[in-house]
Length: 633
Ligand code: GAL
Image (cartoon, rainbow, N blue to C red):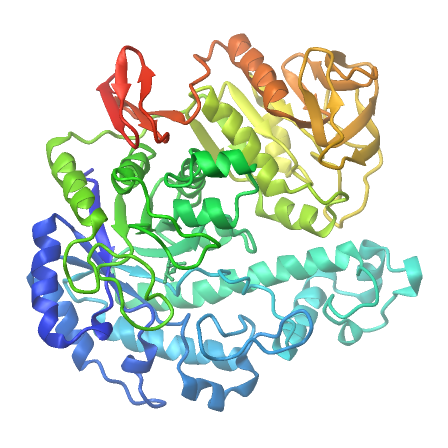
């Protein structure tokens, strides 16, 4: 497969006279893809039912004539102002019941049927017009579902949809009352129409109620997306993608992924480090111009799973962004490193966001490949270098991994609903384990929670899964390698209660969690062999072998054969020891890498990425700051 580069472009932002030159420069730069259209609804349908396609026809023709392939985005993330007059109740309501108003983007409620009908209309019109256009080589649905916390809406439309969803799921209010345990605090319902959304309660709502609301809201995103894919497929043979956003887990991406051909994600490494990664200050300082060394790779591996092997970067940070608390300039070389790292993890394409910095509106401080005056910005030359390197390089393929890590969106909702301690987060627990694996230089495959076959993997990790699916249980029972589960794995029923027998309830492993405690940041539980459990620890009873023990005598890791259960959140030191031991047992090559240096093997090459701002030594080579080094395997 040929790996390719692209860029995000907004023809509607620029005078038409400029399009041709822009297109020629994109092609000369070595770009293959140009993504357009995803925010242009007010130009496509300036007044209700009146379409203006002429400008978009010409834009697509101009870009296509220059040899570029178009990714055409549906504009449903930005309904125009007239839409609000037609459907005043289409705006999502926040937790306090306040509308999330017009004037930016993503101002819609996924459950509003009138808005869905408007989306179906515009997507149909686009698909009919461009479905067979030879330049339209891929589609994108909407833009970053859930970004700006837009999955949950506490509107009338969501209430109606939720009641309907509950009635289908439980069939009778009695069944729902039993499943949720509504006898507690006299919360029993006599009618589905009495059930509200879990906001505006005096104190915390029932976690079972919230969990079902989260599942419902996720299903709404999946069906909203499916509405679009079904229409596009009727008219176009081109593959369909969606662009997901980093560390956004409000809906089940595996669910939307099943209806798409390609998963893609939007990678803003410096924005993420500044804005959403809960790392200590010295880590943020060390990687301030490079980004966290594992955050991108984690998402690459996640979206390779969501896309069932096919995935892209739809938006790649090119320079300073505008939206994080601090927006530093990337170290020269990072726009190249980030692209190569994506390719090494199997990306088919990497598209930079955006072509030219817009001098107006919300993102005027956001860099592009070009400055506002059209001169090349820093990333332009780096993109050119990557394009040249790609042209020289044989395809690197995608390597198989020895290690699998299970990721489950629903577990993230579950532990957000019931963290039990301020610092317990499923997402950051899984990321912490991933980081530990990467520090040992390992290739990792991320797998969905209903995985039914683990036979390709020597080592499987499943931290924090709130329930174990039946296929995963069967796969674990049949697995011939090492498995490490916990903490909190299998500790709830699907209805969100504590199961009896007590968790983790793993076949063959005699261990029961009899008590849990969450820990403030400065209260570690030291382990006898060094390191500690932090944030979370569990007390176990049973006869399983004790592999790690806390200084207070309670087991920290128990085992039966190659099945292990981890009774807490291990700190870096303990995690490294546990993972290293598992790798040794399974004959997996693992050597701790120097800080900031990361490795990824492909089918044909070993890549090293230096995320440091200083040179790194590895295997007799000096890799410069922001450097990428590859050798044939
Ligand atoms: C993404 C979004 C783009 C642009 C970009 C800026 O989240 O999809 O439209 O806003 O961020 O970094």
